Length: 307
Image (cartoon, rainbow, N blue to C red; front, side, top):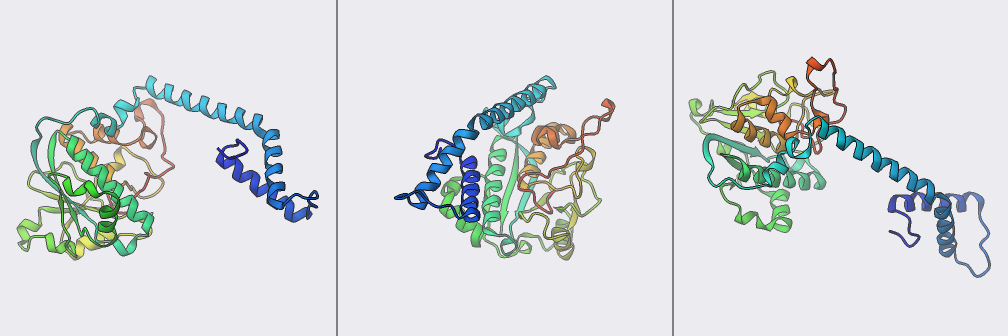
């Protein structure tokens, strides 16, 4: 709260309006009063005039939020059922079963991201590690090209990563450093990208799936697709179109992709996996209901080439 007891956003709006009024009207200040003191007085007066209206709007917003939450529960979409993170927080499995599946997060895109996006990428890696620990199956996870600003971010703000178990942080310069030279072995590596029509029907034991570790808000089209082709890698995407309807390309955050893959290993059902991980507002409703729930917003912190 500010000194006028008004909320931060409301305070900013009041200050903007008062400064504008001062400039437009060239207000003559009372004798002995500074400009800042006059602004504080005006702000307090404006807040007193508007606070009742603001509180009414705030109460209405809370009422709508409660109603939406109630509707979700009635439809069986309460947080425990629709959010994998909350399920995961309940307990760690005593023993994980081997899955035979490995995942590489390709982070060779430092120069294509700004500092804020680097932070976002580090947070997604943290969420992937959490999902990995809570999965019923052991899913190999390697962070490739763990260097430059991403490494600096972890060393400064996520220092406990050094104690993380069963995860590999590789400081290689390029993804190719981690790929087998043998063509038959390389054929078992699949780069996931939104820019292909090849859908994955299942996750195969003995295969390695590569996720593009980049947050770029759709700036770089076909980035991972072209990289995969250059390296002679197969490409694929999750069967997202059957369960999610988006305005443009089917784009998910890297952490969501990893979680969905972990869930699929548990239930072998893509639809259940999508429903377990993604927010209900992003999922296409059952056509049997005669309703089309079109998605109009993209996944938070969406990445260009990860599905």
